[in-house]
Amino acid sequence: MTQATQIMGITFPKRTLDETIQEISEVVGQNRSELCHVVTGNPEIVMACQHDKELRTIVEEAGLVTADGIGIVMVSKVRGGSLPERVTGCDLLFKLLEGNADSMQKWTFYLLGADEETSKKAVEVITQKYPNVTIVGRHHGYFKPEEDQAIVDEIGSLAPDFLIVALGAPRAERWIYKYKHELNARVAIGVGGSLDVVAGKVKRAPKMWQKLHMEWLYRLLKQPSRWRRQLILPRFALKAVFYKK
Image (cartoon, rainbow, N blue to C red):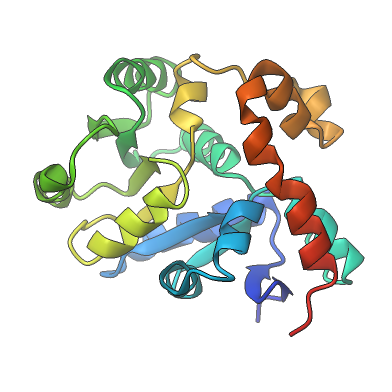
């Protein structure tokens, strides 16, 4: 049985990035009929779950929840849960692409999100860099609610192994949950702004910043407009450390 810890009532399995990739790979190989929804649980999602019942239900019913952010990992250590490392949506996406590069089996992906130019560029980059990966379809993220069903129908007809949803949290989580019985994909993952990184529109923090767990600061320095969003981090830390069941 997989060990887990709870952060403000949200259960996080104690898995490394590699262990998470292994589990997701097994899900694809098992050819299950139901979609596995992977939620990358960051502090914003955990905080929102405290008052948003619908979002909490989505997270609780997910096939897998990962620790998306060093804040989640640090709080777990303070509270004695000790999650091994963060497992972000961006890391998952790149690991899945890289892991299939030398595989005999070609995984198929559908990309949903980002603007039209970024979406196209992401497909070009993936096709060139990961020849064993097949992008069966894509759609930008600037669509209206009345366009949902057409997109869902297209994804359903293509039946990708992985549905990569870059609509931002928690919109991605809500969208996947709403249509999970129609998408006909093996695994669906909300990956935030990862397609911007894939396409080269946004540069990810250098490895040294990541190792020092300062990627959040790097992003803030590059995008000062994020400061309001970053205010949730100290609030999360205080509430999570002193959270009582």
